[in-house]
Length: 444
Image (tube, rainbow, N blue to C red):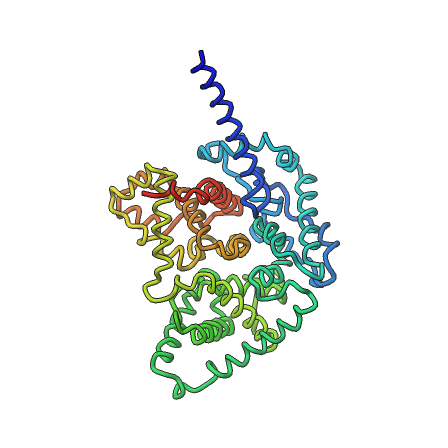
């Protein structure tokens, strides 16, 4: 009799613990806010944009409001899971969990009115955070984790990376000084004859010149001569100023999200229609400077990813293997039985931060989350990439070694929308909440 009572008592405790965990998960990983399980039914309403700070004078263009592919569909206030009815077990648990959370239930509305109201509320929150004299970065990170309104993204990214100071009184002066400093670096290191360069510097410049035309080759904008020249200057100047790593192939990809975001302050419409040939040299140099400094800030937090032998990446690839083994033992065992090494496919993921693996129009949304993570980004990448890989768990278990290698090098993401990306991020957040505070769970 006592045994039954104890069993019942333990069951109730376990259930309460599970509900408590579900509740915590729904509130986000201390950063992203709520997970919202709903399918997007309307684009971001620009009604909320009328209340924005006077600092944002740029018009809310069609590019900002977006076509279906250009719009951040994550503006409802949290990371969403939009898997269909045959989603995995984790997704089903998420769906059942939302019924226990009143706030989430209030937000899960598929009506256009419901989504517009939420969008307007998010825009208002961003505007409030950005319009004060002192930006509270933790609040901004919490908002940005779930996606940033496109026209606010340049300012938000500068703040999240620590390039622009949170104090609005100092911001303009700091940016002006840093942009002039970049120009001085270009004059000192780039705009000089080859006779003044070392042999290593000449080889590095040649390698950058080879890699620039390969940068996001499926987006014609990056093949424009002036864009290539800007990439060349940014990358070479960065490499000279960071001799511990110098230039490493893949860093060219990391400049592209910054370039597109900072150009969006001057250009409207689709990136397919962009041209910078008529843009003044002053504007181009400011954009290059912002890209240079933001790239520097980003890579400061992952320096050993690009030093000799790239030990930081190798360490994270090992963590990825252990996490996948813990989450999905069957696919982990199958990959091991087939002799597939994670370095064979995941090295490029960490080196280029998935830019080569997903459609480019989704990259800036993904990077909202990256930059919101701040110093914690390298470790959180492991969870994002595990979620990304296990999107194809069932498919991978049907493939042999050679088929897996080909599949993972050419993943079927060309038709992905924001829904698939949000699903990846929501899973990553949940697994991080479950495992990151208990590293022994991942021990061999």
